Length: 216
Image (cartoon, rainbow, N blue to C red):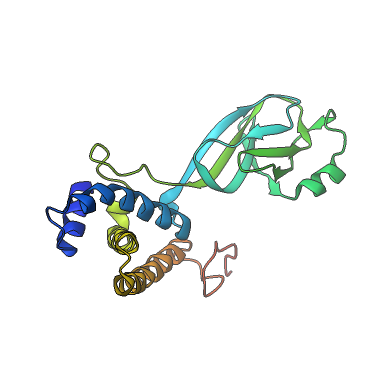
């Protein structure tokens, strides 16, 4: 599926060919559908890894733009990468109250949506590697494909139909497309769960999560 196919399929399903108001709202409905899927799925297809330089004696670091959910932070220095442990802001203040003191970062805490706080304060210039969930590039007539069209096209279609049902204030259609979307989201979440393990390791829990046990 691509953007043009999605537009034509939704228009045909609504029998709205020639409806100028429908056509005018449809791009907004697609945008809302993509936003809904971004917030409700937890797929590796929406995870990015990016590195940012940090300076010695700088305790506060900006999270790379676009990351919605920060999954992990690693401290990278002299070719070695060590995962930092997430703690609360209060914990870090008690653990490392004098921010001008420096050392090797071990913990991080979130300071709002776009900043993290490191403790100990880094002693040398280094880098942080972030992994986090981002929204795939928004669909348009110019950007015609993304992760949703490639791997979650049915979910994208159902979510778009739901947004159009909300726009049209059609309660019966809202109920029908909500049910269809929920069924598809369950399938996509099961796929996400399966992607968090391989055949050499047993699942750590029935409802998913990263498997940290080798089973040996």
